[in-house]
Picture 1 (tube, rainbow, N blue to C red):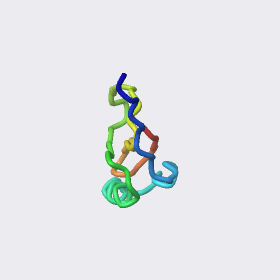
Picture 2 (picture 1 turned 90 degrees about the vertical axis):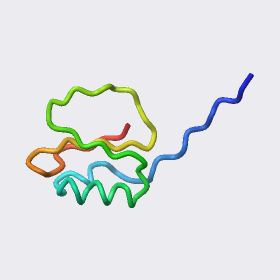
Picture 3 (picture 1 turned 135 degrees about the horizontal axis):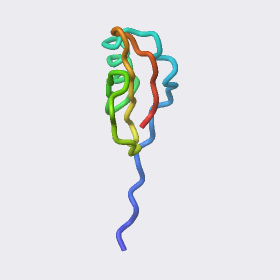
Picture 4 (picture 1 turned 180 degrees about the horizontal axis):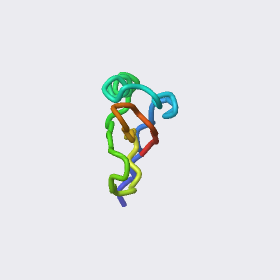
Length: 71
C-alpha cells in the first residue's frame, strides 16, 4: 500500500491581519509570508469549498480585503 502523503505545513500567519489592506499589497505580503496560493474574490462569488493547504482567500470590496480565510 502506498504511503499517505503528508501535506506541507501552512505559514504561521493569521488571516485577520490582511483585513483592511489594499488587495495588491495583501497578496504580495501573503506570498512573502509563504502562502503558495492567494485567491482574491468579489463578494458573493461562488467557489468550491474544498480545503487546500497553503491557500489564502481574500474577499475584496472596493479594492481592500474585507475578509480573509485559509483553504
